[in-house]
Image 1 (cartoon, rainbow, N blue to C red):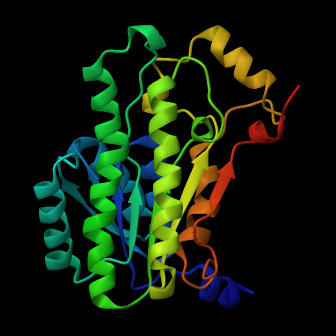
Image 2 (tube, rainbow, N blue to C red; image 1 turned 90 degrees about the vertical axis):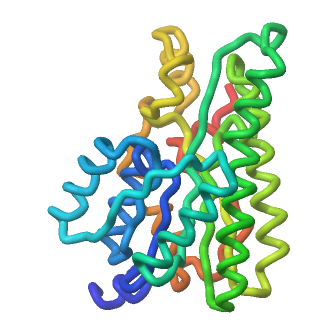
Length: 260
């Protein structure tokens, strides 16, 4: 059984670039990728947070390193790819997990705030998909891109208008790229977390909001970051997930299934 699961989900010899890897959710996903055998590149701004995560990865027998990058800039993403190829020799998996949120009421959203969120959450993902997707195409070998979506990208949520709109765009971008690149063995999927303890949620999660979310979640709790690892490995593996592309894999404790 162990050999079977290793062959199905193992990522030995693969290199996974995790944009947003210094955050709680993507950092935990990176730990799972490393445990499955991948070398992980934690991309973000905070070397201190990355080093804490890398200690856990290395203690569990995994491998990885930190790459500091302003992922909102095309030149920085080009430099990131170049540095990964120089250090690791290849890249096989890309996770786009950087994102920002805001609770500003709709009528008070300024052009500047709207464009800042769209630029980070949508344009940044588009740029990374272009740059790494072009690299995958040039290698002519299988690749996997996992974009982090949101429940609010499927059904609107109050108080996060711009975030919801940005994530809906990411969902659509993902489906379009999946259709474009499927015949080249480049799979593009959206991992859709429900409510997890994430940095960008803190500004909108007061006590009343939390109670409302839990009433709408059949599991009656928030998710633990570790509960994203199984879905991540399924989407990342070219064996287990070989026929999965353009999908929205929802991990939400039943939130999406709930009506009244």
